[in-house]
Structures are given as C-alpha cells and as structure tokens.
Length: 98
Image (cartoon, rainbow, N blue to C red; front, side, top):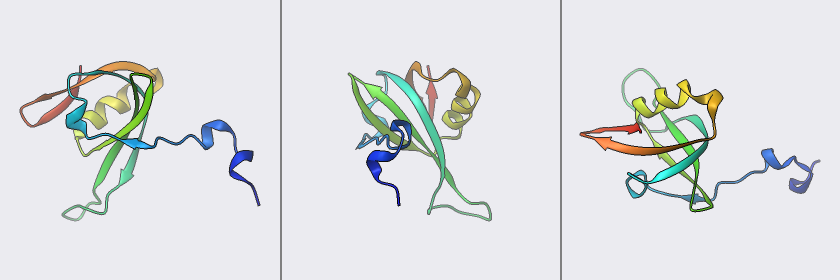
C-alpha cells in the first residue's frame, strides 16, 4: 500500500481554503485549474454539475465552487492556457471572466 508522502506532489496537492465566489468578485486571481464535478443537487432528467475553480490570491491557494455555465464554458475554452490571471465579474445574474 502506498503512503501519502510517496505520491508525486501534483497528486497530493490540496486546496484547503474554500472561498465564496462573492468574496472574490472584482479581484484579480490566478486561475491554476478547474474540475467539473457532479452535484447531489439538481433537477430534471440530467445530472447537475458544478465547477470547482482552483486559484491563488495574495500568494495563498484557494478554491471556489459555482454552477455557472458561462464560467464553465469559458474555463473549458482556455484549459490549455492555464494558469491565467483573470477577474470574475457579475453582470446581472451571470458570472464571467474578465
């Protein structure tokens, strides 16, 4: 059986501090990665999904969760260019990268 310390650093990387998306609106962050996950909440016939966004702010590593489809599509379109500096903004009911 393997030990945690035997794993390569990228596999044992932990993003321990969750931040509400509202707390980072308008702040420049370094988006280092994202993961699309299944949600236990949802509706209809299709399974609901959300995006976990991993980022750095002021030298500290954090993550936030959102079900924003626009942010998900934007992140998928730039996945080969990560990490990237960006700002999450809210326009009406929509979150977007700026």
